[in-house]
Length: 339
Image (cartoon, rainbow, N blue to C red; front, side):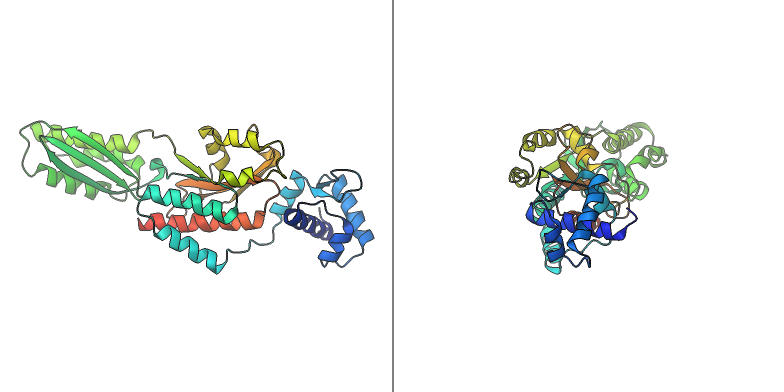
């Protein structure tokens, strides 16, 4: 595809087919787009594109439509992603800033993303394994019971209740609270196990038992394998695409019910600026060959704590969906940083 003119023809075919859902002919391309060549030249270019597998004629005497290969080239050669509008940016900021906790943030993000893109939206909860400790709180409940609260920088909260032995020093809990936060705050959860001996140094007897129990609880909260949660929304958007997916809506919806499938669709990018687009048969999930997935990582800095994205038919507005997914991910990262 060294011929830039043929690439312009492909771009025009994709644009018209996405907009009209009708096969595109050479005459309409010349009328709608400033290609600077005749219909005959466009027909020749379309013949080459078809021979190379970028477009296909769905039936005799029809125009052409893009193939998965054609969409891939279109996406790979996007010259720029138009930013979301000022009104959309304001709506994103206002909607997410109003969230009251992490669950509400994720729920709002799913609804927002599905509304903006008119596709199925998926949002993964931030992973503890990639998070940092914001604060550890120790709350005495009475009757020798202690509530240990571990708060991540993403707003995620883990809690444990401990039964404590009798006879520990009266100021032990307050002293331990200060030591734990001095040592662990702003540390990654993965670092906790290597710092517990440092915090426990110098305690003896019953006090040492209490300290070890509390640190064990913090370490358990930091290392426990928690199933990665994913929230999905906007499936009604997919159900409306009967023209694009006459026989494949049901298989796609079945695939989206599988948790493992959702994790595979969202991908494993580790940077927040890496947008992934998988088109049609590029998806190795059964039932997803007629769908495309646009996903990206998000987090309070450049490292991705989790992922979000959208699923829709291959005939989608790729530039618009890429822009929306990226914008929502950036605002979500800012919200998490302010939690």
